Amino acid sequence: MKIAIVGVTGMVGKVILELINKRKINYSDLILVASNKSVGKKFLIGKKTQFVVGMEEAIKAAPNYAIFSAGGETSLKWAPRFASVGSTVIDNSSAWRMDPDKKLIIPEVNGEQLNQNDKIIANPNCSTIQMLMVLAPIHKKYGIKRVVVSTYQSVTGSGIKGLNQLKNEENQIRGEMAYKYQIHRNVIPHCDDFLENGYTKEEIKLTNETKKILDSKIQVTATAVRVPVIGGHSESINLSLEKEIKNISDIKKLLMKSDGVIVKDDPACFEYPMPIDSQKNDSVFVGRIRKDFSEKNSLNLWVVSDNLRKGAATNAIQILELLIKKGY
Image 1 (cartoon, rainbow, N blue to C red):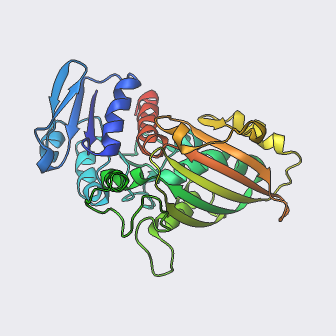
Image 2: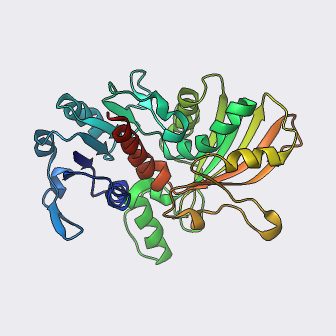
């Protein structure tokens, strides 16, 4: 089995490479792919040195699977080329997410939708993944009418440029700016480009992807904020439900039984999810679970996850594992 990692030199690409080996996925050939400027770069995998190759060479190798993390434009141009030689593409960009002919997959939530005809599969937005990991079991039991979410997003969501800006500012070094403003000791209510309606693309992704994955009837409004954090994204979520919550412990028990979700909720002992604890962890953490007393059948949650892991690389690898398991 041949696996290609497209965008292997990027932050998410490196995590994908790490996880493929950590999770002991059996492959006969691992093809490391990046842009022309990175061709020839070396990676040490176990005791073997491998070199980065370009797109055309990777396509000639006809990998069984190609995991893309190289941006939307690259995916739009090259994913169909890989699919045309028989590769199943798992794409981390936003390029294919809202394409009606492409599946948008979180394995624990809607992995059963996959079939052998899916040749380009979209990985949802990082903020969407962690939110829906928690919302899916709640929606199944109680029915969600409306979601109000504010996200507090790590600089790693902007790639190496965001990380470098924060580190440079911490050390009072002038360097390339990923953001219009200083991020060190600051928060910026701006993730991705602004649209004519006043929302950002990131906020609309949370809305549209929730409707596509979970339920088109759910109403979603979002505010996305960039914060000077490295470990992961955090979300404050308010839910309006169709059914009554008789006891808040029922919600906690429900989430404790959910694959990939860890309940960390004991305020008396100062236990609640924080990005510093989620870093390099594949799970989604939820806490501060409580009724919203201002509105009937409403609930407040705090959700945290490493955006490079479950928010990107881990979810893509889990899709790969599911495809292999199903024989696709």
